[in-house]
Amino acid sequence: MVGFFVFLCGISMTEKRFPTVSNIAGAGLGLRSSHYQHIFETKPDVPWFELLSDNYLGEGGLPIVRAEAIRDLYPITLHGVGMSLGSADALNTEYMARLKSLADRLEPAYISDHIAWVSIEGQYTHDLLPLPYTLEAQKNIIDKISKAQDILGRTLLVENPSSYLMFNCSEMSEEEFVNGVLEQTDCQLLLDVNNLYVSAQNHGFNAEKYLETLPKNRIKEIHLAGYEDKGKYLFDTHGYTVHDPVWKLYQKALSLFGSIPTLIEWDTDVPDFDVLLGESKKAQKILDEVT
Amino acid sequence: MSKGISLFELQQLFYKEVFDADSTENAEFYKCIKPAKNLSGEQSVNVYKDSILGGLTEALSSIYPVCVKLVGELFFNHMVADYLKRYPSGSPDIGDYGSEFSAYIINFEPVKELEYLADLVALEWSWHRAFNASDSPGVGVCSLDGLAGVAEVDQGGIQFVTTPSAVLVRSIFPIHQIWQVNQEDYVGDGIVNLDDGGVCLVVWRNAAFGMRIDVLSEHEFEFLQAVVDGKSFSEIATLACASDLSGILGRCMQTGLIAGFTLVN
Image 1 (spheres, each protein chain N blue to C red):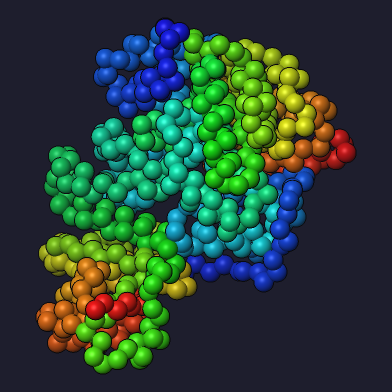
Image 2 (image 1 turned 135 degrees about the vertical axis):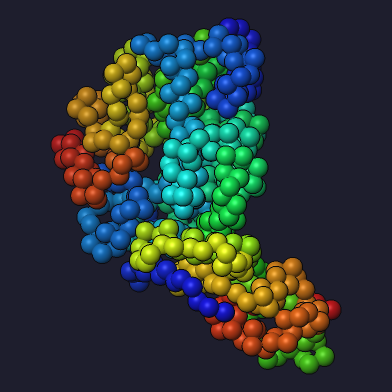
């Protein structure tokens, strides 16, 4: 047998194990694979990282080892799209079992997913799609959230969507739909301020009034990201620094809800780590002003 | 649109509009939507359609980078477009998507002349699966340290177990060379002679998470295939590879390709 190629991808592991956390605080960052090495080498001052759970569902290998190494250094949360909570399909129990296994292994402070659907009839789009705001869709997602929480044995955080269309059959506004979900489950809200701003601009509703309807004690995390201005609409690409109107809406949210752990997301054209770090410092400064 | 449409029906219509542009039901879907304030219905739907199809194409590009390099990004996107429609993703893990791409390519007329492409794509899929495979053999698999304790009378019933990442690949083309010359860090003249003939390979990940493509002899391939097929030691002893069984077994155990064993009656 001829050894043909060997690709060794070394990582610096730490022996110190961070204590299990029951909560997170401050302005964290979304972990992206291009930043692993930098983080392991420099151990930057970041209060917590969010890991995309769907990137760590493989049975083994380097990704999960790296995730554990990050977990040993920082508090973490898990964020995904795969639950497809708004789908008319039944909850995918095989996926939920994989997610539970991942959560048991990584011990995140929170697990979150979206008020959206990604699949129908077992066929996955891997993209977050909008829901009609009907009583049927509301009851459906409430049932699914409850079942997901039962399987995971913990409270979920669900994120408000960004959208580019709505449905004529909707019977209520988005905020009424979201508030109804919060009222009828014990899940918590992951308030994505960028999503809210994007949707408000695209559909012409008032984002500040939307914020004012939300229950203060149910918002456990905030997401911030940069949208792309496509001219006729705003596109939620997570590929830019946070825009000024979103920072302003964020300040409004903090004035209403207090100091909520906040995360900077960046998914396309991911820049150097220091750019993300700069964004999280900016968010931290605003958080500090609240506290 | 009908107020009476169910969530299931609406989501079915949405899915069809994205993946089946010719569906006669698409007009019904457009009656259901209220576009963003400055967009037409079609423009609003296209935001989603482009995002979904773009995301799936990107996922396949990341699994098949050598294929992308060989056919070019534009042609790859064209090649993938029909695949996305014919092969829905059946798993919430996008890493599971793309397993049928090699079979699809065999019948994709425009690349018929690239006879090696389907095998090369199979090699890239094997790499992808090996990278994410489980770290250790399943429950009930004994460590190789336990081999010494197997009584002589029971040794014929030993079933060896490969490391979970090991995937065997065989081709009548030198696909490992094609793969090699298309790696970013490759240094050389980049020439591959297709007449060099076929190759037997094992793609796997070692204990230090190093990804490997090892070239196998015919006997090594036969041995590992028999192991993967669950053949016992006594059955393997009847195969052609038995002429060098101790040598092959020793090398496979030393490298970690053989990770354990079970005993059958």
